[in-house]
Length: 548
Image (tube, rainbow, N blue to C red; front, side):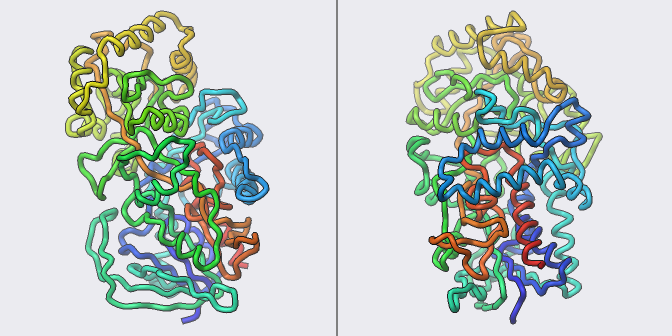
């Protein structure tokens, strides 16, 4: 069958593009290798954080933001240094995305019925100079209903269009090749996979029961990144971050395998910035996993003390929530692939949140009553469950007992009690005043000047070794795979380019497979809220272009 457009991947980018094409009354085929209950892809599992600039929520909280400040932060974080080649289109996409985030994005989302939690989060705070990495102000807007609520309007529209015959949606269709004829992409072929009755996120069968072939005027690749393909992550691992970790936990389901990147490259598409990736340093092994090697990220407040595997406290900007890749580099250069938080019960009850829609049922289920329970003593229920059941937690009433437990957990004697005690005592002495030479203490006081942090994210400064703040808690932090920052190079229409920088006729890309735009819109570092946001924007842009 001949289509106007074929979309590969029913994640957020593919759904957004498909919605635009439905409005334009195009004849569209949407294929995905997963079962129908996986519609929405990785975005369903997300916390639903979106990067917005000068929003009503920011203004209500007294946050002064503007496009110029956001662009300063983006450039300082991205540090584009391949502008003559690999970063050329990425830079153009970045400018367009910041314009979008400071312009039509908010009202466009509102038109789709998407609402936001009233407190704006402050992710990736930087911790260096004004022109360096990080968000100068809070910009992390949490969708009310988290990832499922973000996916819902786009998935609903596609499913309704499928029922009405406006679009053909074929789950369990795995693309194995792009069809090339006369130097143009003219369609797709692949395997029809057997029906697989599984929970969303579980690994589905790859047993083929048939084959397919479809043709179209244009094909959009919206298949995601490589985060679950640990071997490919290690292959692309940049030397600037040290040796690749021996052990990592997977922050994404098994279907995020990167296979469409290779398939598209064989068909003439160019992959750029392979060495840029975004993996988190605060990963927990999920005690109740959905997919294999399932990891969950801690979203930390600014108070926990962070130590490497040898018991040395990290220095600026390697504090909780400040500079993910700088901390990853510091961890890897120790020769070990894990690190430690040391904190108190008072800190964990206010500062620990867990990333993911399933770890935040109060926000995901839009329960105001349950959200209000977060102000009660004790950590959120999901965090408490990890304390009770997770293998990465050590709890003790004395520091000596805590360090002994940390050594038992790691199976080594790397941590020296007196060395750790001296560092904690030095930090605790700095708490006596509201000013300090300790950069983390200064940052903590600064965070509490923001009403959002003071209310729900930054604990009142206190001594770690204060018995009334206890018990003491140590958390082993694993490296957690997540996002591919490089990808297929695309121009601002989403056309995939070849090695000569020319568009491959009929071939387009959106979402993570395109580095969220241009083959690497983030450069080296993300400001957060820009992954699902990048899927929305690239899907929207490609959909608009092909609608014409």
